[in-house]
Length: 360
Ligand code: PMV
Image (cartoon, rainbow, N blue to C red):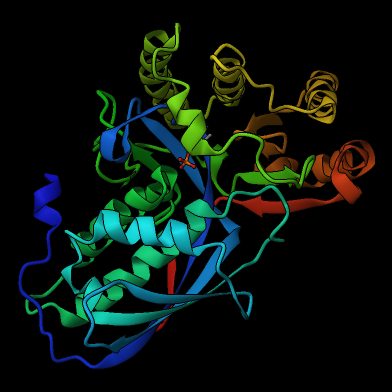
């Protein structure tokens, strides 16, 4: 598929109004996307677990209008929200060529998250994917030709990518690959459900998110990705992501949990190493992030456990572990890690199947 193939050509302009509602999950990358080219094209492939509990729920109501500008109102958790508007305006500008009916309707966007707003959990992946799916449901009802499920999800991921890169991995589950590579079916334009073999060790994999720092992100991902331009280690890093994806594919098939731990933790630390070695440089971990990492390593060693961590571009820690360790690891988190979280706050989650239509 090329980008031009996603342009909606023939549609029925007589539809006056309607509404649609989707819920869409967050995702956590195992191989990290860090660095992009123009038009949200990733510099390297990534793969993520789709989550279950951390979701955005978005209702989109559309009403035909006469004027030819973009027109929308945003409500976040029931209240009108101006702060989200510039991001959505940019999103509309980026996708308008593919969704030509955008200027024909006024949109009321009502959105909320299942996780607390100021938790330091980025809502851009779940938020942009939910909005992209709502627009695709409208496209499906306007389209004069049948839109297959495959085409629907592919274009939803394509649009979500233009909102926030990693959002393209939040449409389906349980593992989604984005970015051209030699090991899996893939595209730079949209995420694809990972269809390789996955050992039962990875069924219902658990992710407990430790909220170390609930504040605003110190470095926005827009700024972060730009740090990879001219970065002295960029090319090696991009090549490493390809290698790690090939290795992870083998690990997923064989169920080698120790191999999984090594790749996933190395990816997280490499992401942070890239930020520490860019110009300007940043340290996004907090002292408690390091305390938690050391505790996890000690626990793993002493208990013959397969628990491991990964990080986003921030201080919070995602604790990943197999379902059969759920009871023991949750006890460990409660007893030894919760004290390092702001107000003792953490969120338990696990791998999920992707977005769901709530109302059409
Ligand atoms: O989707 P963005 O532009 O917010 O970038 C997300 C980048 C990381 O979360 C750090 C890694 C990833 O692959 O999700």
